[in-house]
Length: 383
Image (tube, rainbow, N blue to C red; front, side):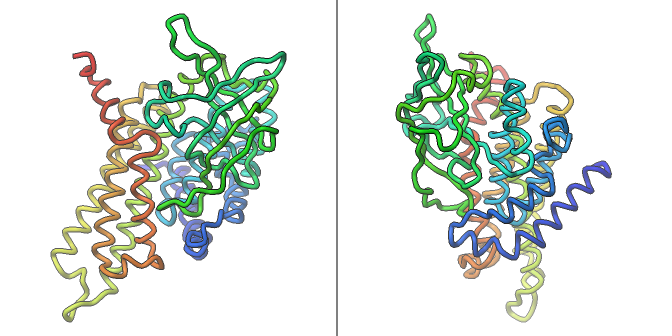
């Protein structure tokens, strides 16, 4: 059961999603337009600062509070939810965890207010899940500057009018055993040599910003190194462990949105003389959707609680992400079936849910990667 403080937050975000996001997001989604006004209002509510300490301009809450907000937003729309998730989990949290005092004081207040967005430049066109093996982007020290060359793919929040920086993972040398030394470097927007493509034409998340990035002799000060040199990959792994809980919460929100819409439609839609909710075939389908959603929610609550308590949570985060993304995909498919032909029409939210669900089984670590992590934590990988 949620405490009063958490429940008040959940209710306020629920109201915001229904009253502010729901009336306009369908049109923005179909036009592929970034929801600047919604993001501004979310910033004013303090949502981007939920897990950021007050001394850095945040709300002084925790990661579970962020997850509750993500779930409620995703019940209505995932483009808005992923903008918040990436802006906090991939933009602000690495700065909070690994940044210098100067980096934090420079960037975190604007990030916490939603006035600026941060992005994390990790994935590369030929990399995918094999991050160290597929990385080709390099950064070399030339005097007091890093010189960055390479490219990144599928980067969220990288090209908006309010993007402040991209934290770029790059090879900064070679270790004694020949493995790449990976470090993370902050590249502010507008830096010469840093360019980004037009927005991708995506199956889903159409109102969010996703770009390919290019770096050509891009120079930034040596002080823009984020954390220790050579620790970029370890930082990335910690960031993803936390981010998987957030993506699980977003997935649960989408799954719950499918239940919400299907329940409403089951009462409104009549066939053969009665509401379709009176037919056992529909009842069983919605019951299964509710079971998936409830179970997935418990999984991410458990992972978030372990994280909040300072306990190991890698396995629990992987379980939550796998279970929740499966629930989102299965519920989106069933909701579309319940709506029949109308479920194939973009004017209905379930069509948007169906388009948005698949990426949840891919981003922040594929379902296959989650199974590998769970097996490894169970001690099976060395057999």
